[in-house]
Structure formats: structure tokens, C-alpha cells
Image (cartoon, rainbow, N blue to C red; front, side, top):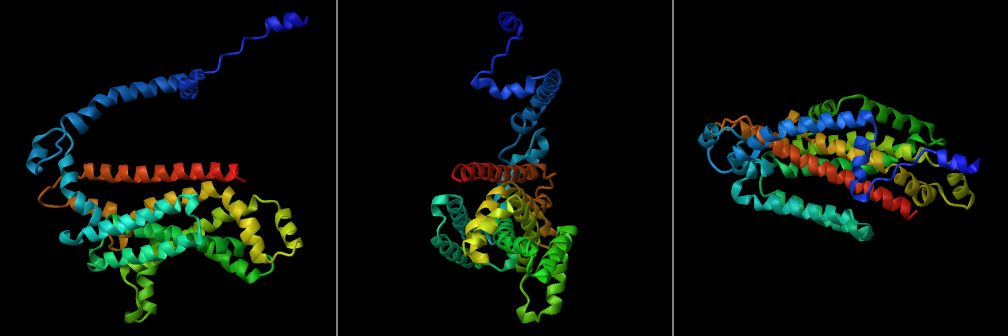
Length: 354
């Protein structure tokens, strides 16, 4: 009977070869096979037209007349306006200053992503680097700042300013000994998350000058940075709170039983584990605010997307600007993809070393 059962058992399918393992989900079932074939057919049908428009019939160097005479993309518009895309109205002869400032911040960001540099000296490096970057940018008035530096400053304000505030808000919302603090944190988080970000921008941009004397009123860019940091704090708070909720209560009870104070318990036991769990939602929040920097156009600031829109209105070109939008879209896609990939790597590393 055993031999009959062995001979009658259905043959097991061979596992896919390592080189073709990624194809298994595409053709594993009849439905997946049909969808995959339809998708491949659509790509094959559209690819020649896209290739012809983007490469074969495109104009990479030339003028508006060259673009109008061609049937393809006008990449000459991007090459001619690339400096304006990146730096906006900053004086052309001084654009080495924002370029160097962006390089300094990029080096700091790169160092901050590597665990080997996670030391107190990194904070000092950020203070010095940020000071150098601001001094470099002060070569022109802030109303001439635009493009990549503005996008970078607003994003860093949301992340570096919003995350510490979000951690404090998450701890305050979980507080059992201080009900007033808990209520204040709940109100702040729910109100900020319940209104559009653009409305927060308008409120901070309009209301701050009304309550402060003119000498103490921050400039428009500074007000936008404050608005993004405050708005991001509420989203980061919920992501951190979700990570803390995933920990058993015995972790905190055991730490307090060993005589650790509340802040030592949070800093040494609870937060390291909670932040590890919260890496995916934290990365999602960072990606969201990377893309939402374009909302600063509503208050008269021009980030990378805003400078592309302005360049498309140049009477010397008068093009559709779709090539510029494709350029900035590719930039944001690459940046967000790198952020997601880094978050995945950090999550695997943190759980592997736990």
C-alpha cells in the first residue's frame, strides 16, 4: 500500500532555475499568464512609437525652431534650461554656490545613511555642514533661491525636524501619567493629519506675520520649512506609535523593574525596538514628503518642479514642457526608489543584528 501511495502521488513540479525565478509569479497560473501576455503585447505595441519619439526623432541640441521642425521629443529644451531647473533665479555667475551647498548636504546625507558614522560626531558634522551650506546660499537673496536647493531644504526640514517631534508626540500620546499631555498630542496629531498640507502652508505663511513684529517675522522660505516640519511631525508620530504598539508591555515593565527611569527605558529599551518595527511606515512618510515639496509653489516658492513650469513659459521656447516634466519625474522616481531600497536594506540589517 505504501508503494502504491508513493507511485500514485502527483509529481512535484521542479523549482524554477535561479536565473528565471523572477518569471515564476508572472506565469504561475492561467490568470497570471494571460495578464503577463497582455502586458507584454501592450509594451511591444507601444515601444516602437515611444522609441521613435524619445530617441530616433528627438532633438538633443538645438533651438525652438529645430524642435518645431522635428517630430520627436525636444530634449534640447532640457539641456538649455537644466541650470535654471536646478537653481532657479539664482544669478548664473554665482550658481557655483548653491551647487557646492547641495554637494555638502549630499555628502552629509550619504554619511548619515551608513551605520558606521552613527556617532555623536555626526551631529556636529551636520551643524557645521548646514552652516556652510546656508552661508553659501546667502550669496543671493532668498527670493532668488529655487530648484534643487529649495526641494532639498524643505525635504530635510520635514525629515530632520519632523521625526524628533514625531517621536515626542508618539511618546506623549502613549503617556498614562500625564493625561493633559496625552490629550494635547492627540489633538495636534489628528488636526494636522485631518487637514490638507497646503492649508497648513497657507496658515503658517499668512498667520505668522500677523502675530509677530516685522523684525521677527521669518522669511517666506523659513515659514515653509517650519510648516513642513510641523506637518511631518504628526505623520511620523503615528508611524512611531505603530512601532511602539507592536512591542509587548512586558518590555517596559521589565526595564522599570530593573530600576531604569522612564527616559532611560524609552531610550535604551523601547525606542530602539519600536523604531526598528516602524521602518516601513517611516520610509513611506519620507517618500511622501519628498514628493510633496512641490506644494511650496502655492505660496510663491519654486522648487524643482516649479522651475520646470516656469521654464516652459519662456517666450524664447514656448514648448509644451513635457520633456522637463519627464526629467523631473525621473529625478523624483530615482530618489524615491533609492529611499525605498535603503529602507528595505536597513530593515533587513536591523532585524539581522537584533
